[in-house]
Image (cartoon, rainbow, N blue to C red; front, side, top):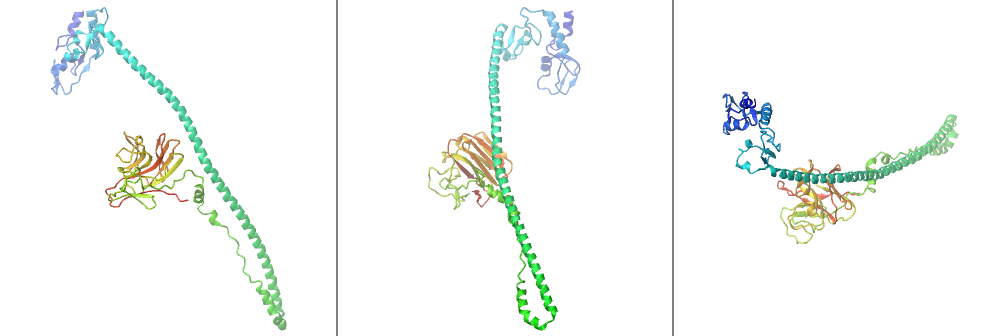
Length: 467
């Protein structure tokens, strides 16, 4: 019976029992390797080797039913082996093992070419090989497991630290704004109390003015009645005798009416918020520092204003004495004042600049060579490039932190806290923050980039808040 089945399960190309049987669209079955070899690699259109039916594409579909039948027939035909190891493709006894495909290999698999034969080994050796592979895999997984356990522990610590940091930041926000709320409440209470006192004084003054006017009104009414009585008597001698005295008394009543006092509207109905903001500056810390530029650090391609608050690039290079403080390669300049402790804030007006680099630099940075302006070299900067703001965070590149060009850049330094943050000085939108343990004095740093398209040099300057 097995022989008759064997005859019906043979490929018409190789006349052997199917190996990896596939079915064409016409319904005929072949070994996968046989039909691919029949078609060759150069033919665009292919046809069935048995009926000649043509196909526009090389489409082969595995015949799972034939795969199962062939496997079972081979098992019946060959019977069980001592070691029970058979080829997973052909179900034939396997004497070799492919260390590339990691599967047992039978004689039918052998015509794979000389290149494939170098990957074969005896079954007896394959066990040790596979065991070694598994041990290597286990070792790799154990190493990765340890990495994940360490990461899990570090994430747990990070979560705790993050929660503590959020708590401290929330407390800091509450403290900072509580001070402002308290200040504003005191300002409101002080102004309200002053308004109440002035209003009470004004009402008292108006009431006194009203009493005085009432007295004067009554006095004038009585005197007018007396004058009418003199006029009505028609006593010529009496009128001529008293006229002088009557008119003198009349002059006493001709004093002007007192003008009522007015409320001081300007103090209570003027720019109250702006006035409070001006007074609030006395408690705000830090406010923009009134920095100036250090001419001894300025590259010869830069021109400083007389007050050392503005710079622009020269059209012609100027020879200046070389000093250890001067930037001789990079067209930049530092501020005269540096910071090695505390919290500080300054702003740079870049409204008229098409390109710039600014931030802070270590006191000991290299000032004579062409080096990247990165934290590794002591520079913490942001730059305007193609209308966008980028943060230079390392040699691998930069990060875009704003898609629009700001007119003013604010820089905040917390030296002990290891924070250097950049803001849009117009609305205080946060742009980027560097976190680093600063060990040197930091100086504000400015580098105006040249604009070849403009004949007139662009100007960058420190913003000064005049209180």
